[in-house]
Every structure is written in C-alpha cells, then in structure tokens.
Image 1 (cartoon, rainbow, N blue to C red):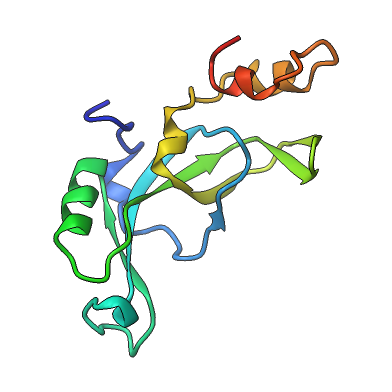
Image 2 (cartoon, rainbow, N blue to C red):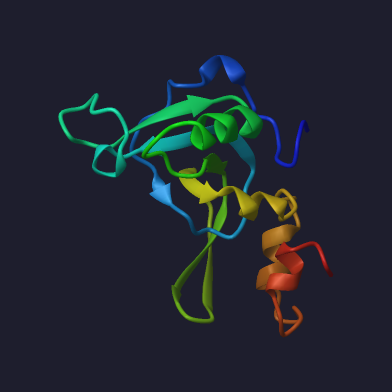
Length: 141
C-alpha cells in the first residue's frame, strides 16, 4: 500500500473498466480496480463530452487527488472496487449474503475497513454476532 489507500490490483487495466458501476453498498471489498475522478462541465470542467459528465482513471489515490485538486469541476476521487461476495441490506437491519461478483464506486474512506476475508461475511451473518455487526466489518471484533 502506498499512501492512505490500497494500491490497485492491476495497474495495466486502468481505464479499461466499464463506465457504469454500482454505487456504494455491499459493506465489504476484495480489491481496488482503480480510482476515478468525475468531471462536470456544469461545474466548470472542460466540456469534452457534449455537456455530459466524464471521468479520468488513476492507478493511485495520490495521483487522483492531485488531479481533482487542480481541475475545475472535478469531484473528489472515488475508488472503483470489486466485491466477489457482498452483504445486501434490502431493508434496514435485514441482511443477505450475496455470492456474486459486483463492481462498485465507493467513497475512498470506506477502504479504511479491512479487506474481506473468508470469515468476514459468515461472522457478520452468524446468529451470535455482536449487536453492532458493523464492528466486524471495521475490524473491531
């Protein structure tokens, strides 16, 4: 890991992932695919896509942050992550273990949670899990 957030799993694939991705959710992460900075012409970014928003991809959070800080109309960086399994919460406090690959954009701060291990989701779903199940995801239990 370089800097405050993890390195990407394969820097040679930066920019090759589909623009569409899930947004947030899932509670756990397996790997970082890249860091994205979205640019908005209506907020002052250069109009490169006929008025539509667009993004730049980066292999490190540090590079994404520098770009965002020096580019008009840019958002703060997001992490593009992959979840090989994740936790769905279809209604508050009701959880379901999903064993399906999913790519999502996350706030980079969510990467401060430990990476998913083989026990993370089973421990979270266990009947004897602590009342604050999120403590498991935060590595506090």
